[in-house]
Length: 256
Image 1 (cartoon, rainbow, N blue to C red):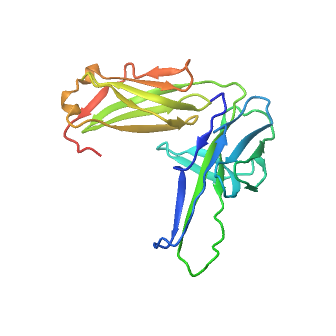
Image 2: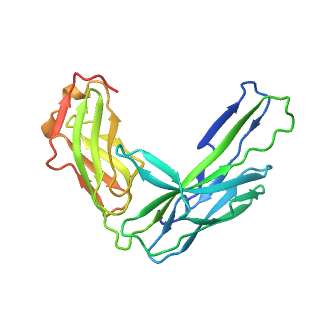
Image 3: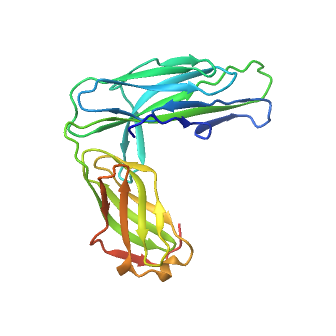
């Protein structure tokens, strides 16, 4: 994503409940620009700007980077890391003002792109009255951070396509040395009703089976010989299709 984008985080939060009565609530709104950071080849530093969008309340924010990988199922896995230098670690941002968080790396560009998340989290305000039951809502956002490979190479393949009950299951593998983001998984099932699913990353070497819910009865109307799947990424020059991958179908399987 080349241009700065502001992302409102009111709906992206982790809630921790300290009781059930509505005695009070802590909440916050902040935006981050850009919403991801890229260390291109030769770059040693970058930054993220965090803005307090609240009209009256100051926000105290703490930050921490984590290394980002994906397991055998393509599920995101995070671990603490000291590979990213950053400042500040904690900051108070007054209403309608911004604070710049600076990130830095050491060493040469890697052979395989490295991925991190830079988590920015609101620190709840202290409870003034210990006798009142409080509900704390902590806003937390993890900005993707990518350290580009010395010689980036895009690569991806569709490894399997299956229709099981009312679910389309598409196996994907990233065969390159850099991530890609699926902007659209386009499936033509030969029924006249196109299927679309989008909005997730696949890191270098990772694989996953993406499951897409289908309208009831789609499986019975589908001819596997006419099914095709195309993956469109955020990079206009890079997409790939199912091609000669055989499509399996099991309409007796319960949707899930």
